[in-house]
Length: 421
Image (cartoon, rainbow, N blue to C red):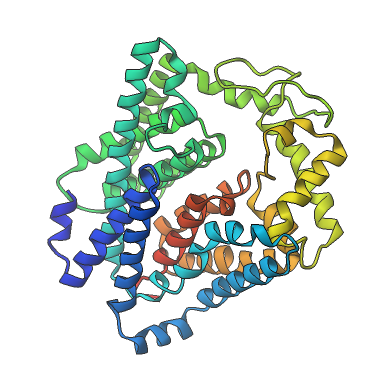
């Protein structure tokens, strides 16, 4: 499928396409500094040579979102070098580097919409094959141990060494891309694409990332309603809905443990001093456990208190972790201290470490302006991808991990490279 689509590309596009697919592989497979650095470096060099400097300057002047993206990166640097904990400057900067070099590389290209779609399709195909490999590996472990836990959550993604919350982002984006090609593009692989969509829905359920599941299922319901009402495809829309319901029924019947992840919502009360066990999807959640809901509420309150200490510029990035742990100690929050928990909210993390100024710059450059552009261009595929990132960051700190910084840093500038901008 990828080879067929690549045939219509020119030489420059083919080179860029191959480098982008290799880059996606480095994100999906176990991390290797040398391989990842070599491929990312090759991608950046290709972007540098792809179009002439004059065009890059013109695009930089036109694309106001790039100004704000780079301003946010400058604010990161200012916050870091204002920190007292100088030993943490480079380790803290490293996972955030992609927020600087991707806007200045991929963000200064002008690409055909058709090419962007082919790249996204390649990404979706790679993700599907990796998920098949993960499921096969996990199922083999299940057969050897008779432990069904290997089929869920982080255990399912052990092959990639990545947390399930990040693989869930890959899965969501892939489903959006396949859905777009299934309903709005003409090709001869419709059966395979439909199978991939249904398979990835099942994988999403097994990954059990609550936030991403809610985004995905909510998007699916809205799309089916849109397709039935707007396109007047009543029979096809009903068939899609029935297919999804059958998949959900089968997965719920044979893999019921994911539902345990949603029991957390009923247990939001907490006491900082309480040292109970952490809930796990393999068992029912009880009131004496720390779970995803009550821990986040507790951590967010700590973060809010830190924010109020220095609301304008924040407590500075490299000092952030020390200050958070000091607050945990003050609260006698031993559960969070022992597991070295972060704030589990990207927006609150920025607010605490870089203040109102940092959050404002981030929201304008990475959320508001990009979404505005997709709405103006009626590029709903890019819009749902960006919305997924923006919602996913409510429950995780993306920029403390290289993969999180890479995903946001690459995809948002790349999706805005359309020649029609």
